[in-house]
Image (cartoon, rainbow, N blue to C red; front, side, top):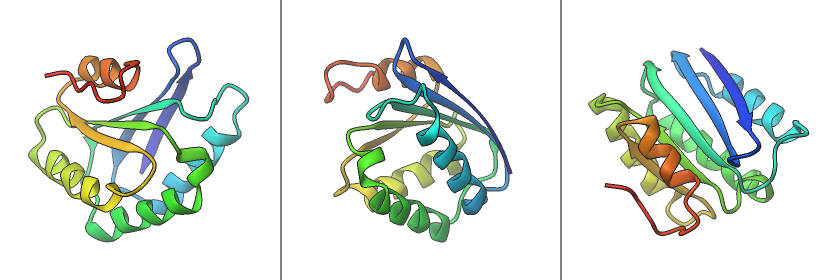
Length: 131
């Protein structure tokens, strides 16, 4: 697995581009680096482009859920957008992940484009989901 990431401080979001097979330990290390970065502000949105990665399995999603619970302070109030670009498997796994995180202090949605994802993660109305 490889994840390229950057922080857009002006628009208040983190962009991630995933490549290859999901690896929870690698992902955890990336998240810790983001949280420790001086430009990261708690509550920033996340855009995860999954178009070049393999789909995670249910065990990976459960581990992510546990990470969110154990990092509640850093994860509280964020919007996480998975860009699936019509990859049915990623769209379906994002829907499964929504069930895992439905009672947690963040929001998760799947989008077909980064434009839609950006509109959602930067929207001031936390209920607004672009069509």
